Length: 103
Image (cartoon, rainbow, N blue to C red):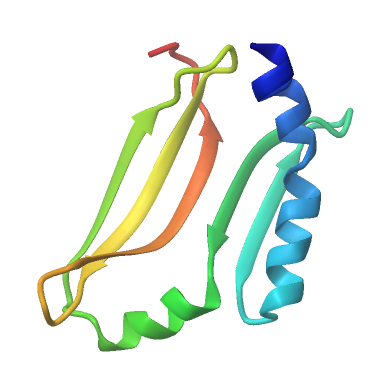
């Protein structure tokens, strides 16, 4: 399975390049990466420019939700979303953050 999915720790090492490409594609996007003193991944937050601009035209209802990831590293995926005029959910931002509990 490692040949297909790779090592999980190696995937976290790709976050700086991913966030760099995201900002390069659209300078108005927001992306933050937190690392520890050894330079290892701690957390990441992303808010693409298109969804940030769309937020001005959404209903004034916003929701935050989170779920634990199934990983050897205890993390939570947090999302921030809203409803558009057609009652469709629009994902505005998301973050991958550490947690103390595993599942």
